[in-house]
Length: 278
Image (cartoon, rainbow, N blue to C red):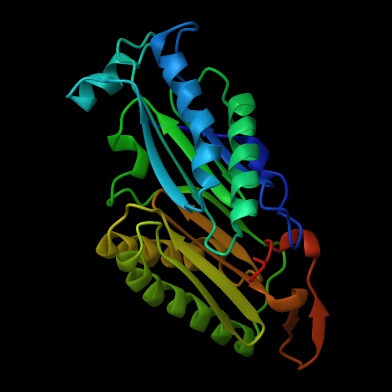
């Protein structure tokens, strides 16, 4: 089921060091569930359990609330008109790999609350905050997404650009490292791969969704890096979110060296937030 991406996310870049709960984008299905149904009850139970599970220290978890048909294609079609015959609700959350447990809990709690407001009544919805991701739906197979789905859920490119060779080499080194380094982490952790990289003035992070296998993670990151290059060119900062992974880079301390060897300041409002490492 396709989700409609909220246009609110396209207005501004996040400021530097944004709070983990800062809104990035949301997607809401056009179908709606009927109020006072078993699906609504199961969904409310599922969303309520997310914060308590995050408090255990798990950076990723998936959930099922209620019973649904064996044929999940039937479950999806049953919700197409908003009057669900299936009652099961499925969901997941994932926190950014560098968050402290308390930050993860707060981010999940705030994101769940915001998702309920932004996508009220939607049969399926997702919301990406700076530090965590929450998604739910009426069919389990739609949660993690397909490995061959390379469409961007959301992307953003800084207004500032640079053709300086040092910057471009550094940016490409970071992207290459991110693309090649997360898969090993993903294979070792059910919480999804998370990778940090830096070169010259550029820093970056990449993460795969928990439950995504190593080979699918690698393939997704390759697509994300290709889309960074194709969509954002020589931008000083860029984020690309695909269904199964994300790649982000930015210039260290908002500076980039120009081709004349001097330093110019990039607009702080066009640079994605930098993860805090502890």
